[in-house]
Length: 345
Image (cartoon, rainbow, N blue to C red; front, side):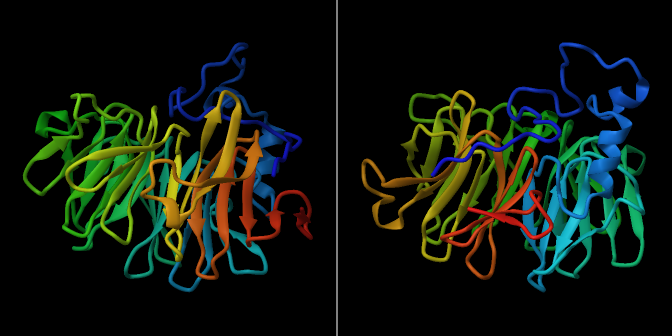
């Protein structure tokens, strides 16, 4: 199924631009535009006052109550209760380039931005953490809570671990493979896996180990890492989708995988660029995952870029794009930005 939308605002590139801002053919003249990736005041106002996410969505999560949490770039961080969206940030902390959101085990929210550090929200008030508080960098692209309750932040200058009182930072000096982080995941054995703009690695609590294929080649530009029900590690890099069983790496597909999830049935879903200028939401059938050529179904393709990915409790698939968020219930796509009543296909 293919879908080509009309762009209403903009589409930021995903893999090759600086997270702090884009290179522009015609540099904006005002300081305002420079700080907001070339957006005019009217465009920014439209994003921040919209009742639904209308800007780039890098991550989609779900909280303990089943609400959908959406980090929508300059638009804000939204919560969807199944009926309506609430913008948690626009009137309280203003416009920032939000990249990730996490609900911790206590029910508090952590919001990552690539222009202003991290925000902590206890449901009543916000607390702001930046480099002044010990964060490695104010450009934060991922948030993860480990089994011990520590909160990890992937930044542009290494990984920061917060124990509730203070930050400890890890960089290439401590053995991290690259300081420009993209994603964090803890496996069943307690190892922490890190995707970076350079090579991916894992940390066993003492030592960082850079991932290398049998030919000695590393895995570069990894944006998502998951562990499936069998304990295999899945990730995508510049060469496609990979699976690691603890001893060997298998190149499952040459289709690139920006985000990866395993659904309740064991199918693997990905978003990513499948050829130049074409992105897709893809599903790899669980019955053929370990075949030489797994069965893959392209559920939706186009532009825009398809980014953050989630299977909700009800089995629906949510995914972010360059201009909002979609839901797929197995039959119907809902594009929430199209109209208050939701456009359907």
